[in-house]
Length: 177
Image (tube, rainbow, N blue to C red; front, side, top):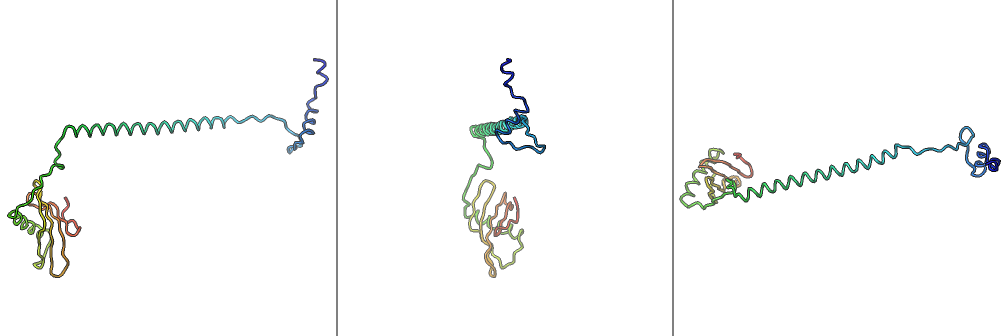
């Protein structure tokens, strides 16, 4: 140890040795500082935190997808259960029937009176039904209100038990369902 003791460089000489070897610039006080600057710990925490946030977001997205697929699976089973049961739905059933000529004349008079009640028309207007069909208690009719002066007005009417249920004249709805 005593042999190496004489060869050691004193700290001040070591500083001068580094200055001459690497040509460092001096700081504002004129001395070179050889301190070791530690890497800040907060940056490592942020990196771990970001990874945690990414994993958390991925977990939330997968959870939402799983819940949505489970919901659609349940509703699909519920719908298939209703189809297998074959429940009669009043909306889906239809009994279209063509109206006979005698009934056509009686219904056209009913339609004419219903339109005259709902829309005040002059004697110049002529109400003429073109097509008619019956579905259960509903009667669907289409026709024309013709006039000598103006253009023709087209109407669609739905009668329910011989009373007006809906009336549309030239895309204007007079009775809402």
